[in-house]
Image 1: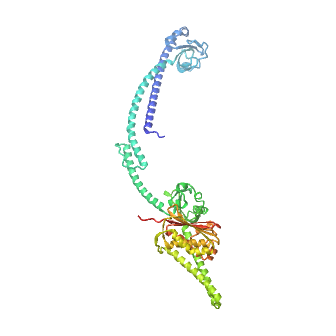
Image 2: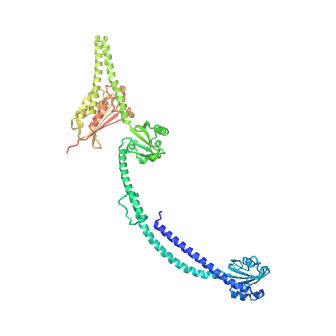
Image 3: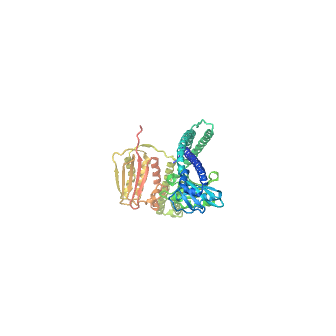
Length: 585
């Protein structure tokens, strides 16, 4: 809890006033007490001097009268220190007084005095002693003593008077000090309020203090400092906004580590890559956040050499992410502690495209080479004389025709797929009912269904809403899915075609079969060019490996989507989601 300056000054002034009053009272009391004791001592010395002129017998005889006259206790002591007479009869037998300080002083100087606590009377006493007789042959000593309690009364009376005066002086002094403090603190409070606003960033205007002393100079200095600070803050804010915009807008992920290799900050790009917010990972180490050993090793190498390190890492998970990481140093201000910056480039899509391109080249080469090899082989056989055998010749020509047709289908599918991707395919959009399109597609495959003794179940929801589609491309989509269902469903199996409204303002066509099925691990790759779950079986059935890829692209053009559900030995269900036709208003 902060103590206000006014309170501090008030406490200081009050403490000073109390100390001054106490010191003054102490000095006055001490001086008064000293003066009274000295006056009593002079009085007793005069009385003792008169009594010392009397013979010892007379002093002993009239001791009480002398004590009353001198208002003191009278003690007559012989030369050996024995008490002959003492007007205080409470102690009849007393020890030797020869060693008392006032007696020793009187023996040496003729008279002596001392102040001490009397154990016999239990109070502070003032003693005055005179030598009786000659110093060479002393007869004894006369001693007068008086209690110092009689000093207390005047001192107490004076103390009360002095204290009253001191209290009045201190009160008026504090009042003056209070007014002075308020006048002093008022501009300081203004300065404090102004600097507090400046500290919190609320800098507006200047502070005005009409004073020509140091406080006025301080106010002018603060105004100058605030003006300079305001300009620097504006410049810093502008630069910070620019850097923040760049930092936030970067697609690359940025991670800044402090001097202890703990994450200090990350940008939005990094949040999107790792799927976590900065507040969740700031303060943690890289190994705690990414749990990636190659990344940790790369940071260790950088820490050893302090040279830029480039490393490719893979973040495992449901959807693995491949990242190129660049680790470099960030120099602290004025050569202070060094920080570390890591820049993450997401190359997952690039790597995937490279893999797809490699697979595509390998697959298209293989797909073309297989029929070409068959054609070339049979042509060479015919050239070598097999042409003379009419039966063999017709058989070979049939095989050559089948492989040529396969090449033709492959080229047609590639041209279709390329045209869709490049946007060169023309689409004629119209308002269609899905039932008509299904009937046309089923008419094409009905013969094959009957040939394989398959059961076709058709469940069309009544009053289905229309969709917006290109008729030819819609039938092509349905034919490709139906063709796969017929191909991969063994004899005696069942194909079920259903159409019903969806829950998201769409229409869903489901084509399910009881065929061989597909493993779940291969489903994400369906739709890639030339990808086949069962390559040998698919190729043997005459497929090009481009059917699902064409369907996938055509569904995207129709603003729909394809969902495949399957498991080995339990068949496959392909769901086609078409958006509904929207009437123009």
